[in-house]
Structure formats: structure tokens, C-alpha cells
Image 1 (cartoon, one colour):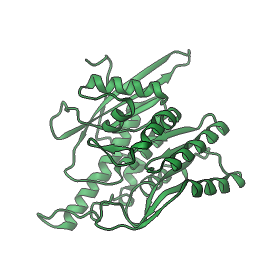
Image 2 (image 1 turned 30 degrees about the horizontal axis):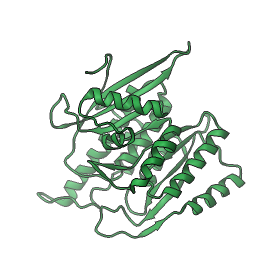
Image 3 (image 1 turned 30 degrees about the vertical axis):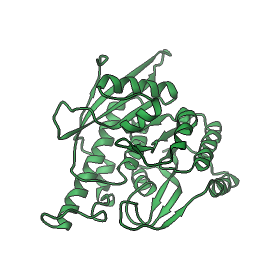
Length: 312
């Protein structure tokens, strides 16, 4: 079997599953060789009361990348990026992606544009123009939440038709595949479900281009998890590799992995916390190793609906 190699540039924690800790293991389980560069290295995620650690600078990133190049092992099939909070670091990531795409025109760049959520940015605002003009145009697969998609396009999503338009605008910026990982849209199945949407542009054998758009109703869980976005982007990378022109199946497998990991995590957290007690951040760390079988072969629990006609 041909080796599939991923370069993952994301945050890292010693304890728990965020950034590279959330992405590398499941990718390895699914057969990918992963080289990881840690944009930050913290003792734990910042949802805890205390955390310590280091932030990688643009210069240090360049040193690491130069070392990889000197040994002529900088040949990748995929690049995966997540959290970054420094403009010079993000600019250096852009330069690396451009160089690797020149070396391998078939390289696929999966970008989780980590900017914020629920109406608030949690990175400096001066990163947004870099994402808009330099990062997103390089991306092949983009996984924003609703707020991030609105920031990148300058459009507000209030209806399903708005969401479709925003995904099309993101396509126009560069990515062939766009998945809105979470939205505030009302689910047809009620308040216990979260809505996600996806869109993929496919070039057919005769040269014509078609797009497949999907809608997913995802069961909500009443808890706050950290690292789920990183896991989502990694799983979408893996399952679009196996189903490159079938976004429906790739998203069903991605979301089903998420569901199994989250259900196992919340069950463990509630049991460990005890009756009537709120689980701690430590108890809510993703149960990743325990979910290995579900990562490898997820039972499909979320069905995606293909949107055959334009939404109004």
C-alpha cells in the first residue's frame, strides 16, 4: 500500500487531547504517517484553572522545517493546520504550504480556520485578513464553524439558503470542499440536534463541474468538550481520502466517529464525577485511546441528507 504522509501544524498539550494530540493518534490508527509540529506546547488546555507552556515562534518553525528539508523528507500528501495566534507564524505556515504544494501539486491542504465561536474571536483580529487573502485560497478542504464562515465571507447566516450561499462564496475563495461544522440553524428534528452542512465541488471525467451539498442533524450533548474541532478536521481528512468524491459518506463517518468519542467521554465523565456533580475539565478530556475501534470502523449513527435542490 502506498504510504500517505501528513504534516500537521497545530497546538499541543501534555495532558489531554487538543490540537496535534487530538489529530495524530486517530490519523495513525487509520493508516497515515503523521509528522507533527507543535505551534504551542502547553501543560494542558486553557479551559483548566492553570496552564503553563511555550509558544513556537515563526523563526523556530522555519528552523524545524529547514531541518526536514535538509534531510529531503519534506514530501507530503496532506497538510493539516489548526490554531495559530501570531501573524508572523501564520505567514510562515503559508510559505511552507506554498513550497510543499509546488513540490507536490496533488498535495491536499486541510485547514481548520480557528478564529472564534459564538460571536467572539479568540485570536487577534489581525489574523483575519491573512486567513482571507492567503490561507483560505490555498486550502482544498475548509472546516469553519458558522461564526468563522461569517467572518471569512462577511455574510450572516440566518437561513439554510444563507449557509449554502456562504459555502459557495468560500468555494470561490479557493477550497473545493467546505464543511460548516456547526451552525445555529434550527434542526428539523428539534432542539436536541445541531445542524452542520457541507459542500463539495467535483470535476467529472468530461471536465464539467458539479457540486454535492449535504445537511446533517447531529445529536447535541450537554457538556463542553475541547479538541473536538481538531478531531473533526483530522477525520474529515482521513475519510475524504477514502471517499474523495463522496462527501456524504465522508461526513457520515467523520461525524459518527465524533459521536462515539463524545458519548464514551461523557459517560466516563459523569460516572467519574458522581451523581449530580458537574464533570471537571480533566474528566471531560476526550476518551481517544478507548475509542480506537470506533475510529477505525465507525458505526454510522448520523445520516447526511443530500440537498438536491437549491434552498430558499
